[in-house]
Image (tube, rainbow over all chains, first blue to last red; front, side, top):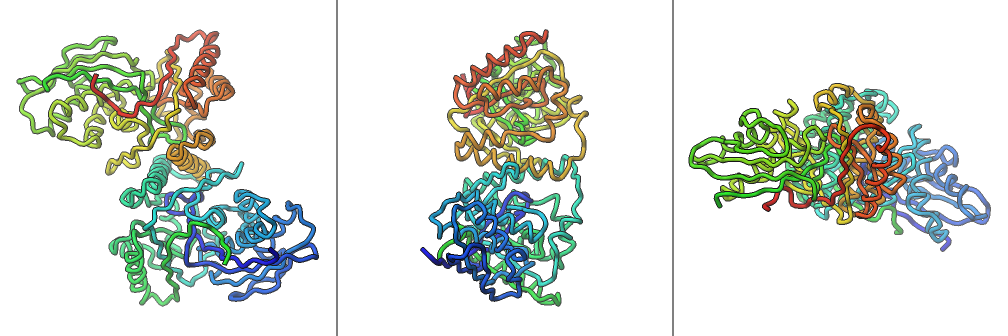
Length: 306
Length: 306
């Protein structure tokens, strides 16, 4: 295979009680990329559509991830990359992660899969490092593994696939305001109350169990974030209203996607997810901030050939 | 049924990363109790063997739990309780929880099961409150539900059964020194670093996933406690040595049982668990502290009729 077209899923990281460790891939929101083998060595980004992003390899997240891959690959040639952005940068649904993951996934396919998914996560994390100074994995891991991915540990990197109940749907509203990942990290406190941390890990244990058991009630009871959401939500216009109204409409839980500003809801069934979308739209109608809303099933495969 | 004899399992609470939320019931270590319906109302503790414990209902954990049960039960009569202690009080393997859980479980059987397991946990917690001032549930919940039990939340109380892989065995060493639960609570810090808390909930997510997947490697990678163990282990003679040697012998993980002083190891297979027991014995041979060692499978049923 000399060329591959790739769908690179958007992802929700920081799923409530799973702050910094749990992300999920989306089925119907994502970027597209084309990767081509070249005879000349190195990475060349030949085309970007949909967004104004740098073509220089070392300034582009996909380029940096691709270089990390190429350094470890037993391959004398290079790759040409086209990026067709559908996910808006800064949306909080893993825009940079999709490009980083898509690049290394596509290259791995073209070379006959020399690397494991876990190794691909390590390469893609280099792109994340460029995007936010921190080489976090909770977007690139679900983008590559699909479904829910738990980043149990960074040293060594350990990613665990968690099953996704079949009726789970996500609704995401992206208020088009800028919240920089670095800013939203800065406002976090470095310490937390032990009793609050215990609540959080009780809920994460419950959420993981709920996903395994396909127990939507348990998922609902567990989708809380007592630590980060109370602080970061102040950066998001009408967060409380979005949350209350979405829960009243039947969402299982509502939280901040990644470091924001997008807000996600998880629901049982597409119909409820669509009602939640409509409700979010109503909440934002009078706010005076532009926004997008997506409804999506869970992507179970991660990046895939199109 | 007018009378029932009950096996009340010992339990390990605070399973490493599951501090305050995750406990497990043991198959071959536990108390025995006999419960009898009486025509006179109220609870009478008629006999206690194996330990010198108060017969007065309101001073005995089983008595207090039984009274909490009786207050809510639609029953005009009362109960007589015999307690045959095999678990040493203060051992850190749920001695008080076994008595509290056994009392309410047996009474519930005698009355035709008017209460759910979750309601029984609430009654038994009153016994725990007498024992340690804090009405914690992470011993009584596994004692009643069997297997691994996650206390996701206290308000409202929410207990989740987590599957137990069939080859999991526990080794427990009980150094016969006194560590009061209240003291071992006092030395804990009230705040923790956010980054440490994140590690802990990543590991708890991994442990729950490992138990569902029967993935012993994942269980092993997840059995860490970065928050409580480093502090509490200073109260336990030779804790580090016990841990290192048990891990070298093949244990999946080692931690403090409850608030100590008992130390538990989880292993894959009874043979390894027995080797770990032998190794623990060697470590303690020269310490000059009396100790007991138990090897046990996981109890999947909780309290049961004998």
